[in-house]
Image 1 (cartoon, rainbow, N blue to C red):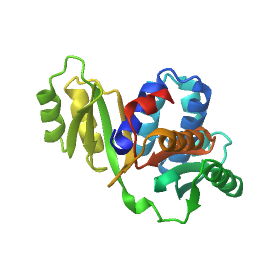
Image 2 (cartoon, helix red, strand yellow):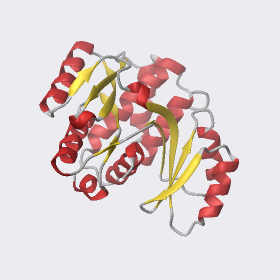
Image 3 (cartoon, rainbow, N blue to C red):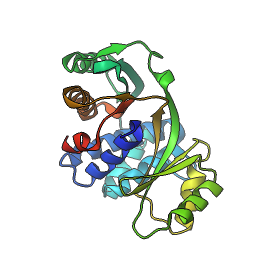
Image 4 (cartoon, rainbow, N blue to C red):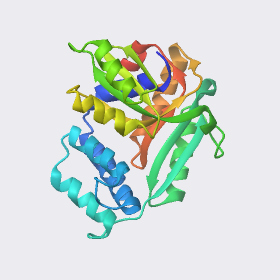
Length: 247
């Protein structure tokens, strides 16, 4: 298993049967509100909002919930102003971790995240301490099914994709931020079904873990992701597939 890409794949598989669907909806709503407040309520001209709306539709979030979240951001409905904060730290064995959050109470969230790191054998670190290990990229998953690899690769690379590899029944396509939507649109126009598409953080190097260390890091990541204010968690672990799928 290699870095964040596999974790993104596993999270996607889990999402389909996630028992915490209500929490998924609330996090997406918060992201839509923040995106609309920052860039306006029209997904056509606000790429960040468009991406979140597409995610919401993919998990069957009701249209009324989507509309309400956007209107809270534009001020058409009363809503909360969220501050975006990326918390950085280290897990067991020096695994680098970033937890992106949206919060209406920075002091509360900071204390909570610090406690989670400490409880699971990690520690918070200052801004910039681990972010240099990661690069923001577009990440697209396409199910193998009966789609020919050469066809998917040709469409993706012609549209500007940087890389494509095959992992666990999926084509994993990596793009620059600027070419992400272009590649996604090219795949859709070629009738290639996309399992998920997101902007993510991919590590330049990874730390191999097994056994108890691996389980402790996964427990830390899961606990961070479960926090109401945390939107995304990125880490540079390298953990066997079977351990991740057990979590």
